[in-house]
Length: 332
Image (cartoon, rainbow, N blue to C red; front, side, top):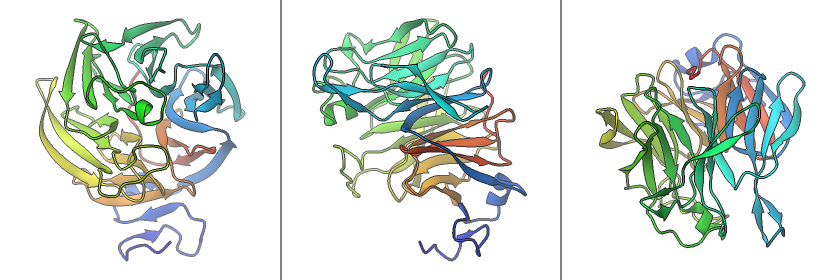
């Protein structure tokens, strides 16, 4: 692939070098000795989280066709042990699980997209005995569409996106609510819509001081296999007012090739987005400063490792890691 003159590979003599520098500040992300490696070939798709006590990655798989009890799809939650790179099934059926995060009490929160016969919900799991409970499963008596990605703010409020991908994939009934972004307060039990202007809201991440919420729109993909270049494939930024309201909506960056899906922010406020060519990194002004190339693109990713400086990337057919100087925020 030819790159604009401002973008050059870290090692221009190595055709396989995965690190592309578009601004010198990306060198602060990479550090002196960045490393890149394929860890394992497996069906890793969404929701990766780092489980520090186990030194493992939990992730959700690609949807698998099943005829039990009726023709539908099934998604498992799997575990990659980083001690030996072995993959095991952590939960065989996850009600079409997608995005996940670990809350500040050390529990696993899962975006369950649901099916035509089971409700979508946000669930909370005990990581050790797998006991689980429903956090929230609808808005004013109406079912969610397909909860997709989720973050927890320092005040323990839960923010998540709910695009209608389940319906477009033939897995859900027609939507009864919009493609909303929600805020749930577990203390009061109140669920509120914080953004309603997205085509398909997807990944989301707070800035380190939580004054900005970044949300991407993956509307360029609608039904499976489609790509509409005139529909959104961008990241938007909002100021967070009074810890609960989103104001000053503005375009942050357009992602190409492909769509933005996974979204993370490091401790210096740089923004990381998945894309059709891997992971793209932007500074706080929205300038593309560098890329980590993955041949098949990246669906989602997470920071992890003892120092939270390893990027674990889910590429549908494999999991890769990039060891960086940049660090992700430690949430628990």
